[in-house]
Length: 359
Image (cartoon, rainbow, N blue to C red; front, top):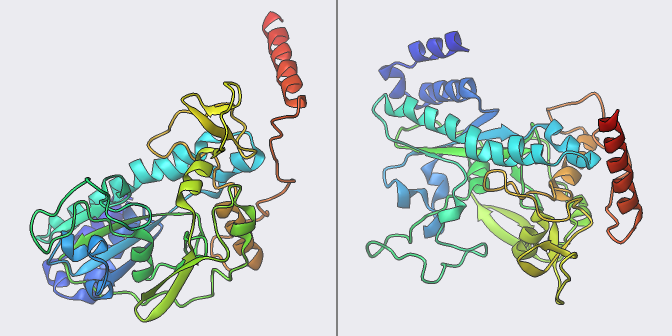
């Protein structure tokens, strides 16, 4: 890897930077060498007409190019959830690990690479915690104010899925997940804004990824993905649509529970300090586990949308990342919390452990 990077450094001369086509080629080589799984480039013109709170020019007025990168969630990181025996890996090595550890390292180092050659670069990954808009796109009340007339409220949020689409990296599916031709929904996204002019990639025009099979709708444990209500936007003259997802319900489901309209007993509560939050059949935990990074509450482990979409895409043979064995090999599990067999099974395990220790 070190020799490869040295070679790219040697190739990346100042003359190449003045040639957008050559500069794009070398930027992609560097991003892949650093650890991105796929790279695409969009020019700033593709963001023309973007809402002010999602406009890259509000952050970098001289921005000329957006570099989009895909980072795979390992298929194996979903294995323990599929079996119902190992949930933390998806958060620690997939969702959270990529978002808060791996992707920042790559986008920061790529930005350093660009800035060392005299062009400004802004590394960006997960950024929604400080955004000025809520999940529905409305300005948060009493959260922030513009520093001058005509400027956006801080913080501006670049929509990463739309950015990946405009960089030619894939499609946005009906579930609102970004789908790449390599990994389907098993992606996290990082981007870099730069005032370096790069040649853009064409918008993805390969085999259709989302065919609206509605597997995501059927298998969402919280019923969050609405089949009969959609959001439609236009990107580069093409209409894109996805489900108008119930984001509040999605957040509850994501953590492993659901809200009810009656007060729960202490033993029924999924969170000790919330008497209306009940554990769902898709979590094996009595209480919501502690976070791993900021998104470690992903107990649903994409129990519905991600795995359902991935299985559908793999069965159609449209993904480039192939496997020798199909993903789902056993019947889907479902926790029956009212069934006493679980308590008896737990007691049996405890007795076996005690016996093992005494031996």
